[in-house]
Amino acid sequence: MAKYLNVTERTVLDWAQREIIPAIKLAGSWRFRRQDIDFWLESNRTGPDPTTPEDDDVVIHPQPFRSAERERNIKSCISAIELSMQNTDREEWPAYTFRVDHGSDIANEAIARLIKTRKVSLGTKRANGEKHEVIKRRKA
Image (tube, rainbow, N blue to C red):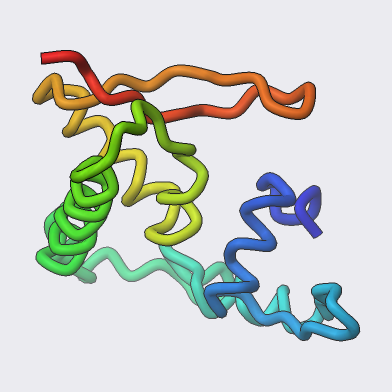
């Protein structure tokens, strides 16, 4: 399914767990019906409908890039990162945790803002033979 959607397997599983994409969990494994995925793709299509002729008189008023809801979600993720840094001697946290909890787009923006304010840095750590991104507390 990841190849069909041109995303990573982790993204597909994340979407399934957050009920963004149609899926069925059966015996601990996620199942996807292609017809459901195709319908989901069509219902989330942007741009002109390929089955209707273009109308030059259509005016589209796009919403601002950063909606109020998206901004609230980013601030919530920033708060979650900062809260996890309080009252602990730990110096790093897996970025993956925040990406799963808040979505990759929101978490990446939150991390970028914290990096910009010099509260954290982003690095990698090797665990079980694999590299993982970690959020590191910046020394004051």
